[in-house]
Amino acid sequence: MQQLIAVLGEENVDALKKRLADLIIEHARDELENYGDYLLYPPDMTDLIKETMTDVEKKVAKMYKDAVIEINKDYIDKMKNYMAQQLQEKELRSKITEYAKKLQYWGNEHSKEYQISQKLFEILRETEPNQNIV
Image 1 (cartoon, rainbow, N blue to C red):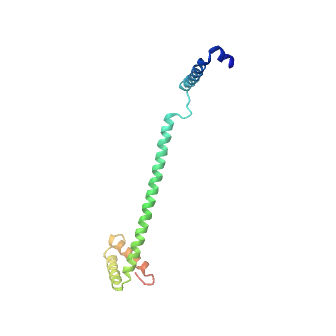
Image 2 (spheres, rainbow, N blue to C red):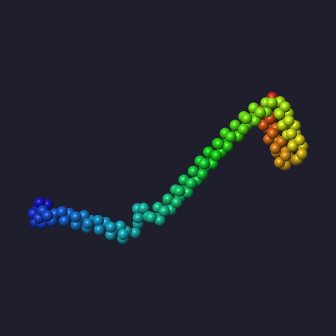
Image 3 (tube, rainbow, N blue to C red):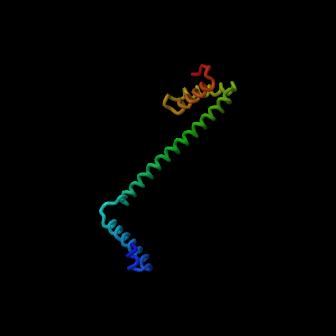
């Protein structure tokens, strides 16, 4: 290397290093451009990104759905607790029982009235399980 520097001169060594680096880069670029296979083929990467985003969207949608269900469960439990407190009043409880019985007889077992009556009976049983409710 010392002999090459002596022949070329100190001032030309940096230019030679730069030119060698440029030649190596150009050669690598030519090989990549003329090479038929890619390590990461761009269309494949686009498909992979789309698939990943679809998976992410599904997972986020499920998380959101689960969160909404959990919030609704909490709300329903709070409403049941509130109704349980309100239903402890005997007069109100007997009125609800009477109303539920009327609804039950107004329709058949597939009607809205009947379904509502069954929900009311269920709530009445949950709030005072020792009672014998139809």
